Structures are given as structure tokens and as C-alpha cells.
Length: 168
Image (cartoon, rainbow, N blue to C red; front, side, top):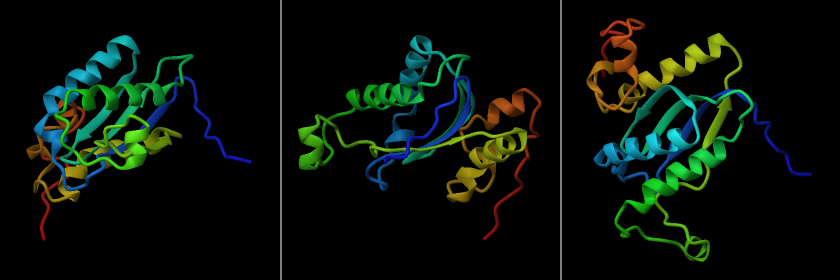
């Protein structure tokens, strides 16, 4: 019997979505395009972005779906497809991807985690915001431009120096 994950209507989920080629930097090179695609999907199929960070080869996001809705897979399919269609066709593709009509920009799967409680939510928001420092893209959280951290600072939810400074 195959295990099927429960999709909770109106749930809050943490996601990690990766490019197929981990050495690529498409997501930050084309971050404005990614934002437009996400906004288009949000307009057609509403959800709330609680926190998000875009890194060169992957992104992390926390979404809350509307009451009565649990279809995050459709939203990710639309985002990944919409972004891929706007990219030049230069990536290598396996026979399997060619047979399925897939581009090969994104990994097929992604990680999702249903947020259980306020502590779990806080932990994942912190993880998202600190991720550029963890991957050594910047020394301070405030220096990474592609993060909801800046929204949290503008809203007075986090101080600008949150997370301290990374030291080797």
C-alpha cells in the first residue's frame, strides 16, 4: 500500500523547492520573473505567503492556504511550469524528462511540512530568514535582498540586526 500524505484544508506549510542543477543560479538571476509568476498564481489560486527566501538554486516558503483549500501541489506545478516556460531552453534533459514533456529546470519533487503549532511556525520562519547566512551568501540576514525578512522588519516584527553576524 502506498503512503499518502494528508493535505490539510487551510493549513500552513513549509516548502523547500530546488532547481534540478544545484550549481545554477537561475532563481536570483530571474527573481523578478519568479515573483511575477508567483503573483499570477496567487491571483488565480489565493494563498498567503507567511515567509519566503529565494536563494540561487532553491527557495523556502511558508504558505497558508485558504479555508476549504488544500491544493498546494497544483500551485507549485503552476509556479514551476510558469517560470520554466519563461526560461530559454538550454538545460540538459534526460530521456525521461523529454518523454514527459518536462523542461528539467526544477527537481520533480519538493519537500513539504505541515506546520503543527506556533512554535513550529516560529522555527520555520527563523530557518527561512537565516538560510542565506547558513549557505554563506551573506554574513548578516539583513544583507540578503530576496527574503521576507525585510517585510518583517518593516512591520516591526523583527529588528534589523536579527540573527547577528556569521563568523567563520
